[in-house]
Amino acid sequence: MKISNETKIGALTVVSLAILLLGYSFLKGNDVFSNENRFYAIYNSVDGLAISKPVLVNGFPIGRVSNMTLLSDGRTLCELKVDSKYDIPKNTLAKLEGTDLLGGKAIVFELGTSKEMAPDKDTLRADIKGGIAESLEPVQKKAEAIVAKMDSILTSVNNIMNPKFQKNVDRSFTSIANSLQSLEGTTKKVDALVGAQSAHIDHIMANVEDITTSLKTSNKSLTGTMANFNKISDDIAKSNIKQTLDNASKAVADLQATIAKMNSKDGSIGLMLNDKTVYNNLSDATNNLNKLLIDLKANPKRYVHFSVFGGKDNKAAADPQ
Image 1 (spheres, rainbow, N blue to C red):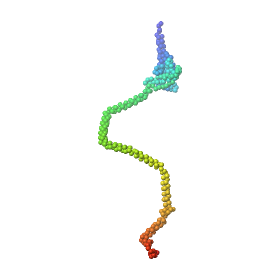
Image 2 (cartoon, rainbow, N blue to C red; image 1 turned 135 degrees about the vertical axis):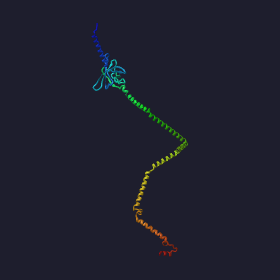
Image 3 (cartoon, rainbow, N blue to C red; image 1 turned 90 degrees about the vertical axis):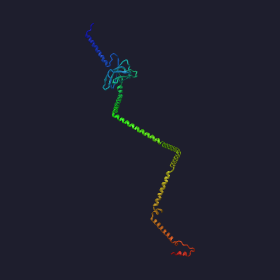
Image 4 (tube, one colour; image 1 turned 180 degrees about the vertical axis):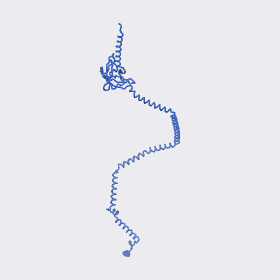
């Protein structure tokens, strides 16, 4: 039987359309030739994730992302198709992880320990883990800092290679060499001085040793002296200083009272010190006594008579001139 060209073209067209539909469905993540379970996971951000990205368990692909829907609250609902021959525990965690340095993402299942398996169209717990590119961000910053330091070092090296700088460096090394030579000469002079004065230094050290020995010998005497001083301090502290001070205060008060009485005219001493009449009387009596003594010395016979018989002399004494 001969098949017409129109029939061949029609059949080829149907087969091409079927292959196109199957390919489109496969690119969307639908496997039309296998029995798959669908799971859902909701993520706040799906940066780097796309439809047909794999679903992995310890790096082994068990499915793919079949659909992605943006929800009203800004989150993304991801549909995951997994081969039905793989059992997924109900408490499995679907993590969004980076898979390459370019920021590509995939869904990685962290299988749970529950004995109950997740049914078809179940919603799994979701989590987002930083990718390799994000983990390398601190390394990138350190690398940039190292590059900046290397650039600074290269700039310094270029400055060092400058002829003017080399001349300054040579001059600096020459100055350092001269300073070291001067320091060496000074050190030699110090060594010579110490060598010349070594005898004096030995004598000084011997004197210091003698002084130390004397201090050790006098330690017992110093200890006894300090003990005596402590005893005297204790005796003074134990003595009745308050009573002594009270007695001294009382004596001062009595002396002040006596002086006050002497200054007043109540007593004899006060009258003698303050009354001019008593002073004048004493002065007149003293003057009269002086006159009497002078007259006694000049005319002793007026006052003293010596008579053996007491006759005529007594009469003469009775009639003085």
